[in-house]
Amino acid sequence: MTKIEILQQVRIKAVESALKDALSVAPSSGELARPEKLLEAMQYSVLGGGKRLRPVLLIETASLFGVDETRSVRAGAALECIHCYSLVHDDLPSMDNDNLRRGKPTTHIAYDEATAILVGDGLLTLAFDLLSDPATHPDANVRIQLVQLYSKASGIGGMVGGQMLDLDAEGNQLDYAEIETLQAMKTGALIRCACEAGAIMGQANIEEREALQEFGTLIGRAFQLVDDILDVTSDSATLGKNTDKDSDRGKGTMVELLGVEATKQRAEELLDNALNLLSPFSGRAEPLAELARFVVERKL
Ligand code: GRG
Image 1 (cartoon, protein in one colour):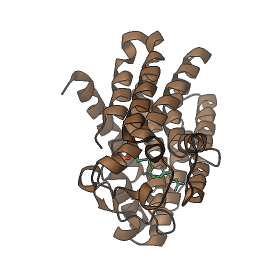
Image 2 (cartoon, helix red, strand yellow):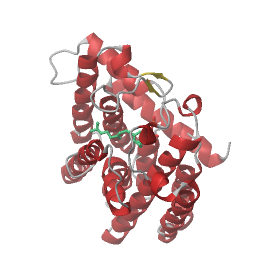
Image 3 (cartoon, protein in one colour):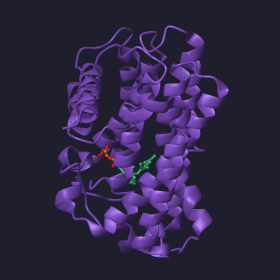
Image 4 (cartoon, helix red, strand yellow):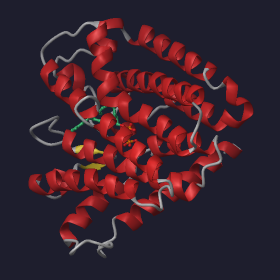
C-alpha cells in the first residue's frame, strides 16, 4: 500500500467509528428513546461495507485548508448517512426492487419493507442532526451553509429529483443531455456536495470553492459513467450488487448511447479536466488527485 492509501484507510476507519457512535442504541441528548430494532437495521445498512468515497472526498478536500479532522469526519459521516439512506430506499420493491447490496441481502430483505423505509428516514434526519451539532463546526454560519448545501444536494433539485427522473425514464431512450442531467442530479450531486462541503468547512475563498465545486462535478460525472460501464462489464460477486440492471429495464445510460469504449474515454477526459482544477493547490492536493484517479480506475 502507498502512503496515500494507508492515509485513506485511516480516514475510512475514523468515519466508520463516527457512524458506529452515531448509531448506538443509547439515546443522544434531546431524544426520548431509540428503538433497538430500528437501530439494529440502521447499523446493518450503514456499517456493512461500502467504499466510503463521499466522506473521504470531503475529508481530503477539507484537509487542503487544515480543517480539524474530528470535524470533517463528522460531516463526512453525515454525508454517508444520506448516501446509505438513498441505497436502502433505491433497493425497495417499489423502486429498483433489489435483493443484494454490498454483498449482503438488502435491508428490506434482511428486515422488512416498513423497517427499510424507516431506516432511510432515520438516516436522512440523523445526517442533519450530526451536521448541525457545534462539534461539526464551531461557527454557526458554516453549519447553516452545510445544512443548506446538503439539503440542495440530496433534495428535489438533486438526488431525490434525479431519482424521479430515473424512475420516469424506464422504457424511454433518453438523449445525451437528458442522461447528463439525470446523472448529475441522482449521483453527481452528493459527490459534488462532498467536495464543496470541505471548502465550506475550510472557509475557502470564492475561487478555491468554485474550483472544488467543479472538480466535484467532473468526478461525479466520471463516477456515474464508470458505474454504468461496471454494470455491463463486471459481475455481482465483484460488485456485491446485481448487475445489468439498467439495460434489463430498458433505461438510457451513456453506455447504451455511446458504447463501453467511448464512455471510458469520456470518463478519462473528465478525470484530466478534474485534475487540472487541482493545480492551484499543488502537492497538497495529491491525495485528492489519487481519489479522482480511483473513481475512474476502480473495479468495484
Ligand atoms: C431513493 C432518493 C433515492 C435516491 C436513490 C443513489 C441512488 C438514488 C440510487 C442508487 C442506485 C445506483 C446504483 C446509482 C448508481 C451510482 C451509485 C450511487 C452507486 C453506489 O454508490 P457507491 O459505489 O456505493 O459509492 P458504496 O456501496 O461503495 O457506498
